[in-house]
Amino acid sequence: QERSVQRLYWAVVQGVMQRSTTVMAPVGRHATQRTKMAVTQGGREAITHVMVQEVIGHYTWVQCRLETGRTHQIRVHLRHLGFPLAGDPTYGKHPIREEDQLLELQLGRQALQAHELSFIHPKQDQVMTFSIPMAEDMASFLQALRNKAVK
Image 1 (cartoon, rainbow, N blue to C red):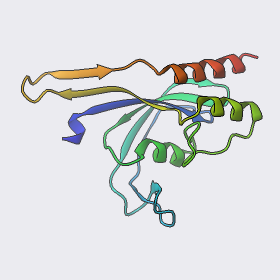
Image 2 (cartoon, helix red, strand yellow):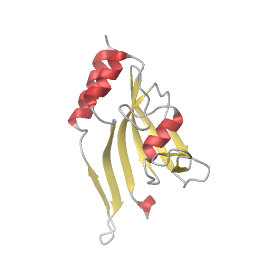
Image 3 (spheres, rainbow, N blue to C red):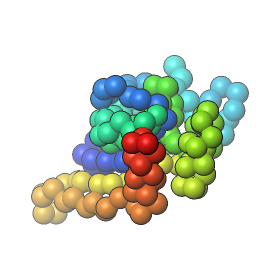
């Protein structure tokens, strides 16, 4: 059932991601920090498709499609790739550049947003798709990154 539902998310990650990729890495509780999740051998299967949308300076805007739905899956998989979410206090990295720190502080949250949900309606047997536009704060964050990148 979980694979009959398609979930798309937008995220902005720290770093320059050169190409799209698929992460197939099990996710489970962190070995020593039990409130966190991590890629672990004993974890549950987790698959995330990461599609690069735009590289902006020291950041990359990506779209993530989940095949599985583990706790913190996107955050953990992006961190595992070496591209943590901008503004993520749990799995992120503190930006090195002061101007990047300020932009992430202005966002005030992790740069992750649900974008689209699709599933087959159980009675009508038709694909139902629901999507929302990018949140204003996330769009402003991307625009601020673009403005900084052209300077």
